[in-house]
Image 1 (tube, helix red, strand yellow):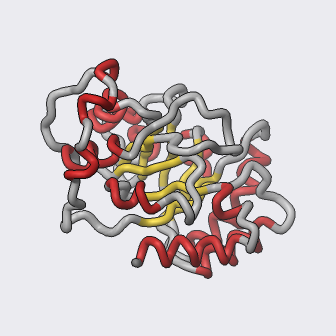
Image 2 (image 1 turned 45 degrees about the horizontal axis):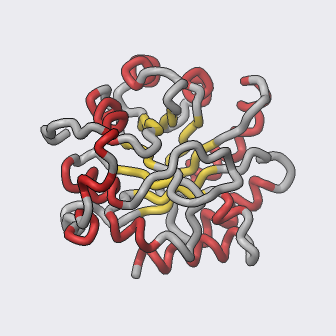
Length: 234
């Protein structure tokens, strides 16, 4: 992680006015990639839907995100999805729960600000686990996560989303700032669709985390993934 002096979040984005326009993506950084996030309902025909999505275009990772189920039920729901990801060399990331990630032997865990310390997750899951941390719109939280050993930081929400209540609104400039200052990848999240994603890619996001933009697409999940593939490969 590169050295940098912390910026006070209270300064606001006005302190970085024009920064995004001057940003040029580092040619050494890989192209931006798709990071799928599950809907809350992953039973029924969802394994078939996930297979269609993964077969329609490249995805770097899939995050398993369910709520209000016990760990035994969550593990049962995760098993076919994890197998689909493994067969396609897609990282399988568990949302919130280090314990579930360890039980499943998942590729990693994504932590919200109230879901534990990345250091403790690393100790539990081992050096090869991918650990991501939600940082909202905060440069300070992102730097703290990097110092704690996170493998990626997630900024958002960038747009209105029906997936969860939006309490923090991020601007693309934070992606440009992060990509210029640090080597750790950033993930853009929140209301992202093929129609609105281009400014986030241009700003420097390393991954686009997408849920409803794929699973609620009017033409189906496969069409959505193909649209994202066209955007990211263009």
